[in-house]
Length: 232
Length: 131
Ligand code: HEM
Ligand code: SF4
Ligand code: FES
Image (cartoon, rainbow over all chains, first blue to last red; front, side):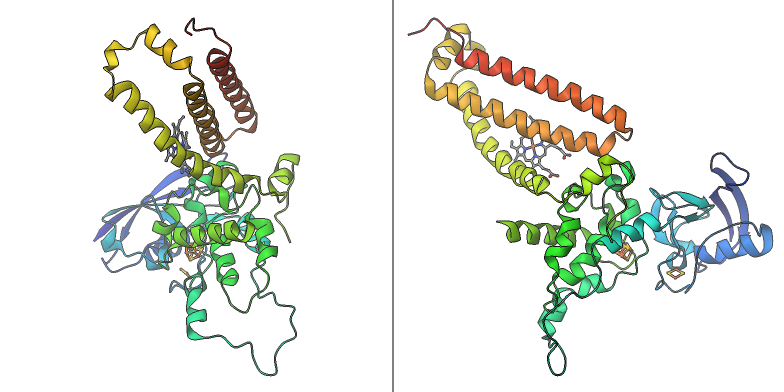
């Protein structure tokens, strides 16, 4: 089938503002959007810039705004989109070139919640044991691939970039509810501040955007509750 | 490592206080209290009496009683605080330009303070001429 592919392009060396370019691409219905981008880059216009690595929905590097929704280009099939497809960079982060954005603010928020196990107690002889139930408590957060689909779909994040964003909260949830972790108060410093979880207005965009089907809004609410009951 | 703040305002946002937690709790509690206050208010002024028969005399008689002064003042205070903080949420979410956001807030807070002042004054400092 013939696909009309519209890409929002921006070259910092030449352009003042992003502009749309249209490409006609021959595609199979089971092709992924990533395949279309490859076809453009390899056979039509080598200057097109985008990120991708694994090509299989695991590395989280190719989140884009595809037909108005944040998705992974490598997990989105042409047959689910139709013959006119629009691709834009994810929103709320500075565009560097074409579909590549500066991820640093996103990862700064990630680092702010200390996404690693914190436990100063002397380690036991063998391991810090955990029951299957305790492991299941934070299972959903472990599926996150840090693609930024959720954070860059959030209207509160778009406003002034000071909201810590859903992805960082999901990552914090992963450790706050880990029975081996003792660092939740440290994480609360970033999470309970004016730029933390209380900025969330439960818009649910994050939950709809997550390619890993993590119930992001629910995890955010659980973190809110944990802060609340820790305080009162 | 924390988020790098480049401006005073960002640094203030990052400074860890529990203020936003208190507002979050307040919104829920005041919302719940408002449900009952407003149902009561409408019940007494629209169901028990005919809405069209409400005149100055009726209002003056009611507002001369301390119970209704306090009741109405609670609605006034809670609705202004709840609605005002709700508007702050909306402005923080939607007005991108920091200068515009600041001045919109100045106007909104000013208006709210004026309404609160006016309402409190007419509840407690007005002689309704009823004994
Ligand atoms: C009748 C009972 C009411 C209940 C149960 C209620 C409940 C709530 C709650 C829980 C929130 C917080 C939402 C959030 O954190 O995202 C909220 C927000 C808000 N409330 Fe109320 N409320 C009530 C009455 C009122 C009244 C009388 C006003 C106006 C004076 C008002 C104006 C607002 C506004 C402007 C917001 C912010 C909306 C937003 O965040 O998008 N509410 N309300
Ligand atoms: S929670 Fe989902 S959408 Fe957000 S960064 Fe992780 S995988 Fe991506
Ligand atoms: S290329 Fe790795 S997630 Fe799409």
